[in-house]
Length: 190
Image 1 (cartoon, rainbow, N blue to C red):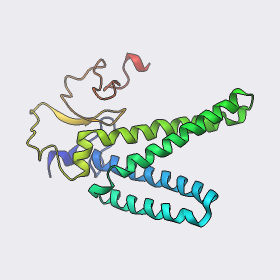
Image 2 (image 1 turned 90 degrees about the vertical axis):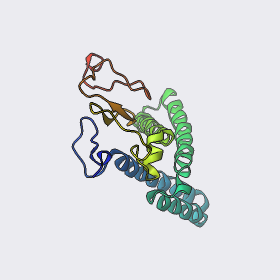
Image 3 (image 1 turned 60 degrees about the horizontal axis):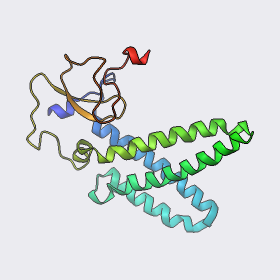
């Protein structure tokens, strides 16, 4: 078993898979949910013609799930398209809230969270470690060896994989990718 197979996200329970596999699984699930939303929306507008995009989404999902190289960029593009639709719906919903209809406030919060999480899933596709994990490569395959006092850990906010020395981490240390604190529970969090 390689060191990469033994990585554990900081603050989480050990899993049988490494963080890249877990992130890939979550991204696949988000893609399925987003595809179902788009298919349902298209079905309500175009009826049976929505089956064509549904089969396309199914093929992309199967390719992405099996880590096919051709499917890699389709997922963030489709999630990004749906994020734009969510953003448009959020603004429409906020407009109705501002005009006096408070009923859409919960829906606006759900849309806001969907947009935030979708952007995180899109951003991860630009991270080189995720690209390597998706393609089946390991950081160790590229000849990178960590010093004995360092380990690979994921940022608790954006899940960027970083080489850190756990004995030297402090509350002031920040992720170079998202600028969030690497150690949770510090003075900023209280």
